[in-house]
Length: 212
Image 1 (cartoon, helix red, strand yellow):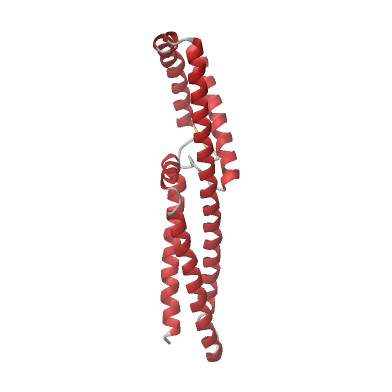
Image 2: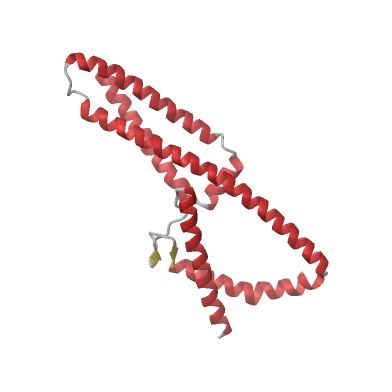
């Protein structure tokens, strides 16, 4: 009975924490840090039944195996004052590590927001090019050639500068965030590939248009 209570309680509490963490982080950082939408029995892609069993199993392992071992071989061998000191040290390290993670996550959020705005600007320009090329008189076409070429160069420069700035983010923190939340990295990589392909296509169309 005790095992079942620990399993169910641990699973439910961890699911609540995971769901709320996902929701809050999405609101704070404008990004999904994990997504279980491709798994069965999920709720909004934030939690799923498979991970519910993981949480319950880990709760039982901690309460019935890990905690007794720690009490016997670690806690029981250390004085209360030493335990308090170690607790303060661990909490301090955790607090600084959490602060560092949040700061760099906010930095990635800013880059993500900039990336989305730049993507929208490039997409709007692409629509203008695709719907306008060949639809103007000769005089207007000459003006459009210069306008399209200048706008493309401007957007391409913005995009290259953005990629360079992103690469210059502190590598260790960025890498750790992407390892912890691969869904975020994959999403940005796919969007980056779409924008690169779109810019290449725009360059080809504008070059052909100018050389008419």
